[in-house]
Length: 473
Image 1 (tube, rainbow, N blue to C red):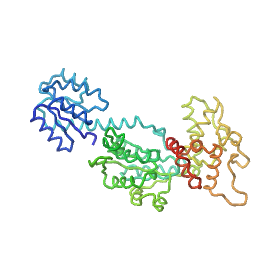
Image 2 (cartoon, rainbow, N blue to C red):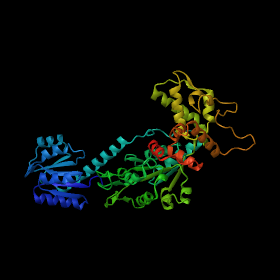
Image 3 (cartoon, rainbow, N blue to C red):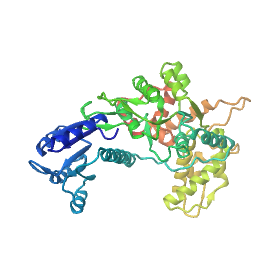
Image 4 (cartoon, one colour):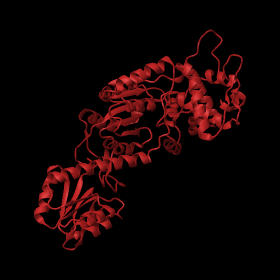
């Protein structure tokens, strides 16, 4: 619940005890005070979410305390109580930052209305703070494509969206898994509630539990204030667990409980918090294989895989390549103020022949770079694409860009995985072994590149570069 700790500052013991009893009955933590000094002592020891403050108190005026509270970095909502109300005093209190103003004697039902308003207001503020911090370059973009595979995917999204089912979206890095999740959210009954995303691959392992479930003040070094986790922020809405395969077994166990019981405890806390969230998870790994290798809990996998959705790689829907390229070209024309007359025939051939190991994200990055390098009124050309440098960007007689190997001439077709492996290793060599730069050029996340290199038997990088890699993620 957004409101947890409340101070009742009232010198009349009958009113104070009555209000305290009502609040405790609703499971709030309540501190009662009869003077401003007593309330100030509570505030010096902890942060409170809400205060009921009487105007006339033995050691001062409650409105003066109201003004002082506005300078606190974390300030509670304040409901001013008075037995001598007037329009003028109400207006003055609201100007000084009061959340509400009530006249004594008041009905207990009136307090229920105020609490409901305060809960909703606090929740909206916290969700808004999260979205202000969150940087999401893909938000608002459509799931583009006109291939049969994309038509089938959109049809599946429409069917799944109207339900409350947990969804597991699988696919290679850069295929648009998050866009699928956002499309499900936009077409769901929860569209007016929050959509909260957690990038499990980018959060350090020692902080992921706090990100998921929140923490209490003093739970660990640096936890100077209480913090709500992403599941609490998503209450009533949808939470996206991006790259769910990256979380540790310890957190997997706690996540399983949330999915089963729809309740959690913050790190360092004992209060059980009920949450109503729809869970959507994404992964670029084969979770069944991770389960077989004992890297991922089988019971959690079954809980997540209620409705599986697979997003096909770009190389399996090549009819979308030019369609996407033209859409990206127009978008980046507007963004960068460059007028491009179109895509040349040679450039189209290069785009269609490329293997796109980074999928749609790589295509988007390539087209943006091409638009930036293109002169006003000029067509996009192979030289603008940056496929391994200008010299290797030209298209040969086979229709395959130079620098990308053609299939063997012995009649056998090489496995795509082998082509991808050689392509990634060549890019790593061209970047002087710098994995961060290699991932950026390929349109991959650094974690995906590390996983690929691990599969190829390439030794992990030094600790310092790993730290840089996590930041790049």
